Image 1 (cartoon, rainbow, N blue to C red):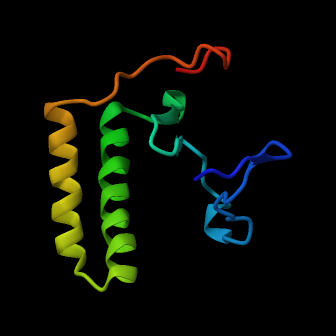
Image 2 (cartoon, helix red, strand yellow; image 1 turned 90 degrees about the horizontal axis):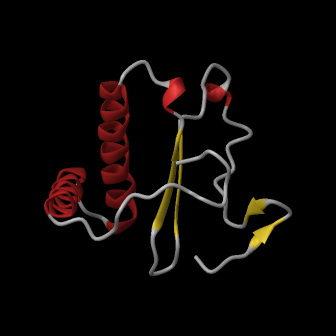
Length: 109
């Protein structure tokens, strides 16, 4: 997580150039997290039909996250899904960070 940006790109960036299933897709969210620091989320609401579609994508991401954590840890997706939901519920009940606009990036928020 301490990798510096390289030529405008982030070191350790997920490389998806060879994934042809992106040909008919648009990017709607980008997320980063600092080492022991805050998260940065850039969301493009003009690319979503409704806020509910945002929720659907977030739930899909949770399910993908469960699978991603389960595979290398030798645990079940169900167990990882339960842990992710517990973490989401804990954050919803007691947010650790406050959402704020990105003041040094133009109009992004």
